[in-house]
Length: 482
Image (cartoon, rainbow, N blue to C red; front, side):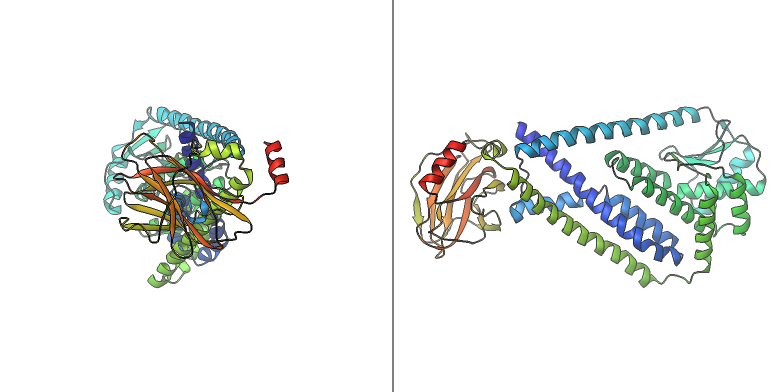
């Protein structure tokens, strides 16, 4: 039970870590390359690519690839732990969980306060509501967005995902100002910018320790506003008037608001928005092939990053686990009872003809470096390692120990064995739990196999090892150290 708990924690941490690596790499790449797209005035593409960066932190692509590596037995990877990994996992897990709970509480508290405050809003004048309906029709937006006034709100803002609203302060605006404000806030709803802010909140709760999270929400906000300005340019005659109204309304704010989209920009950001809008108005129309090429480049970089980071994680984890493994870790990790009962060794000159499928993997261990076995095997299926050259002068035996998750199930039938250079097989078989040391008699290439000749899929856990010859002095030192 404890092993299952730690295994699930390892999978969770692996998913978080892989997404952390993937998101960070894509974030850095786009941070460097994004300036080129910005100089060209490609507002919409920039905004969507920052959304892809955000999703890279949340989409579990890396852990799916890692499960594929685990299933195929590549790089000797599996979710097993040693005592040192267990201690580190516990400490990091507690720290991460405390941080995530704190940030979740902070967000929920502020959202509750904002929601409670907005309940006191009052309806706007009929002419403003009519104007809102007219602009909704113009934008192709459903007329299901409430518009209210609130005395505690200082700036116009869009709020809400399911119950969407536009909230105005208790200020009398001119007809021209109302037209621009409503266009701006309704476009935010049309672009679902509030939903993307909610997705960011989820990412920030999980990756509260990431130093780039504040910059990520800043980029999403800035490009969201630029994209909103770009869309507004289709409906508003004068962008000069548009920005004059925004400058008049905007107030100085030190941080972006994560719960709403409001006209709250400092002078530097307003200048940046105007520069981006000017670049967009001056740019040549983006050719479709250019847009497709940019998107393909981003997806290509993302795919390479997923593969590289996942393979690197698998190799790194195996290395760390190997370096920190001791005898106690091997026993606890697989929860494998040491079934050291010698069974009759059988020999055959060909593979079992009743086995329908052979799956190749890489779980062949190195000398003095055991490999944990934790695999699912379908009925009439065999898992076989790749070849490894074994020298009789140095190697004593190939040791294999396995057991099924439910050891007393009468349908569990497993066999373990080795295959030599001439494809001759030496094996032992039983109903659930097996241990055997296969003595090496000749030099050559050897492979290890685990076989399910039962009628149901089984979970097999255990380990395999290549044991060297040792002198009497080495044997004595080993016994004394243990």
